[in-house]
Image (cartoon, rainbow, N blue to C red; front, side, top):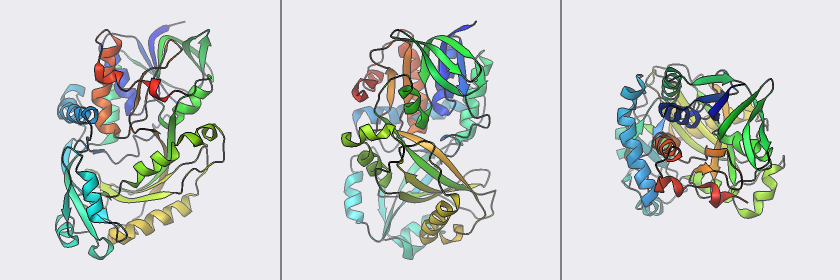
Length: 391
């Protein structure tokens, strides 16, 4: 039986980038993904790169690293990630206070600029000026998340990495060491295993008796075929409701309930938002639900109606576009920082998950983490240790 240096579980951008960076070090890496069509949070993301949004020395450094990394990634991976810059429009609903939101933005590297509804419509003509009280704008990076993910995957394979399509059912444990993984049909051995399974990471670790403060939302999106309508900008909510939802759902008193099905910790929020990819498809959304069961069934018809109603208020020309509803899990942590590093009290098991700004943070952190694991200690990686989130 082959023993790998590393097994990586999950082939969203966290798993493919880390697999690539480890393979680049000459290590024997097996990447395991359960979905043959790679339908994960990366696949359904908007592709935004909020490298303007760093608010602490740590996140400011990651934003700067991410911006630099994306500028050279297409050349390195020998595939076009469609990296570009666009205007981001952050809409303020009539119920929100623009001045209060503006104050919260002052901590960012580049605070978004406040606009009147009329000024916002000059930048994005599809906006409904009567549906917003104001808006903010800032330059925003953008990539194709799928093309970037597959660019990493193909580069990983060129380095000799192996991809296996299978469902990991459990971690193999001998004493205090994780020695590999079990799928439905095979056992795979490795010196080290990294969990990059996004919203499924918590349940997979829990099956091995590992408790960690990593959570997930159920997130939904409508995706259109290529359309003639031209959305010039990325449009999202200025209120950052998702981050408040995550903070509320991660309160310590809820922690014991996260491993029980049937709990909804906070009410649904909908970030009325839209992006148009370079192939003219649109992604429109986004509801976020905090439900403790990763296998909860969402009502697609009800969710689609909620999305269409919300987007119709600010971008009415998008409300009735033909589209297909999709659902995925998005991992998050109590402090909005990812978990990167060895899981305490065990050997051979690591985590790389829980990113609040994944498409910016993941590429530089995958590179830093691989360096850290191969003898180049990284102080930034140490700050993201899972030690702060174990129970």
